[in-house]
Image (cartoon, rainbow, N blue to C red; front, side, top):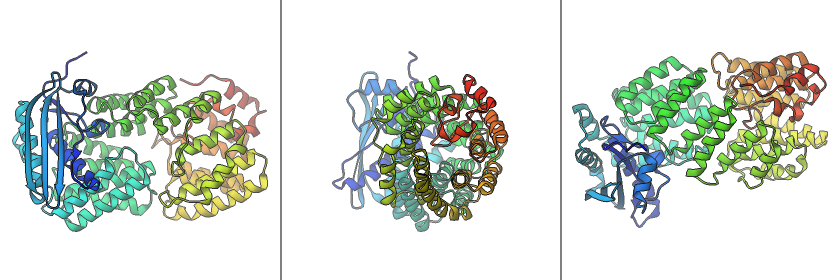
Length: 561
């Protein structure tokens, strides 16, 4: 076991000592701001917050935690806010022998809170004998805004971005407060940068509808941040992420990320973002080395570990994916998203009993539609959809306002498919007609959303509209061509194979299937399962091809390496 470098530190969650539990966002924000300032010192190794947020504020097993995080020192703290007065307690601990190196209490007015964050960062750097350049000293001392109300709104928005799950509700909460912060102080570059990052991440991940308006806000916020503060690392990073997530302009994105690396030396987001770019370019080995670099800076970042696992899934390296998912379960036991991902791998391997055993323990909430779709697909693969149809109808009868309307249109597609497999053709047609009327109008605002276009292609297939289904499937392939996106580009080709199989075009279906099976494949339809010969043997959508000798040859072959 290699000893942790002496100049290394993790900042654990600060305890909220305020009487009002609603002030928890403030304690989170102060911790994050101190950590951010420390992380801009190149001579220090600072662990990202995403790896420390799973711990308690003042845990008893500090040496073990330090070992898990690979650091020699831990900073603990607490925050007490009462009206416009803040008390911040901090203590620096040498983890190996649990000895206190330094502790202090700061009582400040809310308007003077930045000086605490700067002072703490400088004292810690001194204690750890870290060299601070003149530029770093200026960055640490900088005040992001002179407006206390704008800073409070920023901290509230930041608290939503620090939550572990990238849900619609969390993104809307972050947007609301970050927009309020820049309204109160239009020169608040840091808030503009974080707003852009939130928008761009939601745009590519589908946590918010990928509309032209969302993409434009991401662009405007990134450009505004950079104009206001050209040397702000977060502004440079936001511009890189906008070019990656919204424009797929990977060359420009990489230039920004490499520039941001100089300004944010401890940021795991930069190698993580470079891993995503390399993956979208089909540079799988390079992507893996970036993932490994990010994990050294952020060893317990669940989202990062899951994304690394998803790379292995796309490459159909299922044993490695499962090992990475088990790492996640060691950090967050019984996490429903991670367990669902393990079930998806079992489905891809054709092991329905193993998938069923995992899914039987899970009870996703109505808003947790991604995990629920995996359960619906399991029932369809088992050809026993009758058990899931009542639950689908129940969710669709009581829409949750926190869930995107697009999601309910997609669930109607699933209901139609379940009803068709159950033999109720009339009910299936009605479900698909309703799905088409709900999803069709969304294309106007999301003309390049190949997931939406693909769903509409399958819905029109169910309704027997061959011309519309094939046209939409071809449009999805044009919206995300494989030469521009080797990660998600195979998805529309799979949609085309499904449409062609159902619509009596076996030659075109077989050609598309051969293509998809020969390349890495992410985010398969339905519910994220990559196509494999084992899955083709089970999926009812390919029943029209069962007697075709070419299809028999495809499903008889072992999984490609």
